Length: 200
Length: 200
DNA sequence: AAAAATCTGTAGCGCTCGCTACAGAACGAG
DNA sequence: CTCGTTCTGTAGCGAGCGCTACAGATTTTT
Image 1 (cartoon, protein in one colour):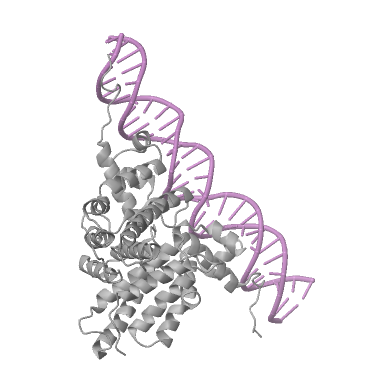
Image 2 (image 1 turned 30 degrees about the vertical axis):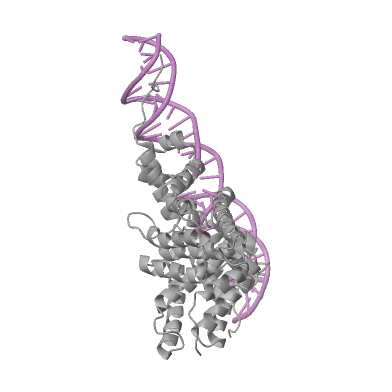
């Protein structure tokens, strides 16, 4: 018979180790994070890391996926719970002020900062695709409101989406440079003044 | 007698080599730029590089200085030629749309992107200090206009400066991610809608 | 001419990188 | 128990990193 796995069982919590890897990549970025640093943070040896996660890039990919479903979930929540582009994106920017400055975790957004200045073009473009996806999602949301008349007819969805994403990224960088939650909240409010009035 | 320098003369143009180093650091960032990549781009051997510029960090410091006086000079020009915070910072954002997307050079701003995810804390904090300086300069400019009544009394100089810098940084990132000059110009215009009316 | 000074190219230093071979340890199956 | 399987820790691989010793080349000085 065969139910459980055979052989010596894993001696560490895989999800916990993945979270430690997430925090490490988040703080230092892909390139500046060494496998030695990862094994130290995860509390395991290198062979265990490679057996459980593949190689460094595969671990990073898994980290990015897990990040989106944990630390980055506030974005999906805004999309799910709010209606209208202004309410959704406004909430994302306002909550980002809080999320980007929480204690006990690195500041800013992993997706925005972890793969800049990267030797591996694959890693750099992987996160760029995530960002492009978010941009396109913003644009679709805005375009839908323009189509229904909830946003003024003259509104350029692409431009407004670019603006919103730019502010989001700027807030992430500012958080990393030491901006407080209150300062970032003020940035979000000022950004929403650039938005046209919503009629719904 | 002694006028010119003795010994074998340098066989390359130092300023030209420095500019090539600037472009290389600009494109790949400090960490991802290897000395081998630098010597290739500069067209010189490693010993010539070390003799002329010190070490990698010293070369980078010189690059940052030269960058501020060449590629980044549009910012100082705006400060010098415009009067009033709104005109100055508005011009900087509008011109950034052009500067960040010029062909024949890397996109975005070296000061903002070249030292993120850096192993050397010194390098990372060196550029952070430049950014902090720019932020403080923005804040002083705004505060002065609030004091004279050119900007409304309720205006928070710190917040408005943070907002402007955040947009500037976001524009740089968007440029690196492929945004067009027109899109960035639209971002700048939307950002200025967040600004209060200037009365002078 | 010879000597002193400075730059250039080769070749390689010590170090860290991502990654893995290997032997021993800890488990289930028979 | 013994065997097969899987994980763990040590120890080290080849490659690239920043950097430099050294000899030869090219200049001014004497």
